[in-house]
Image (cartoon, rainbow, N blue to C red; front, side, top):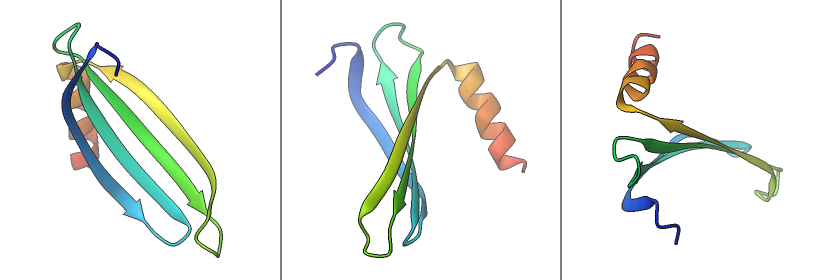
Length: 76
């Protein structure tokens, strides 16, 4: 395990259809303490339910950036 991550991980499935799944995962960081590691995980599935494509986008965000994203999503 990477020693810069705390064990406090949150994960939520945002969209889950037979052909597409989007998950957001957030880890607290140890250094710097106020930083979050945020993963956006996208998966695509064929008609048999087999994963055919996926990609993960990782961002390191501080509290102000997290709040800005949350406000943007809330006010859409």
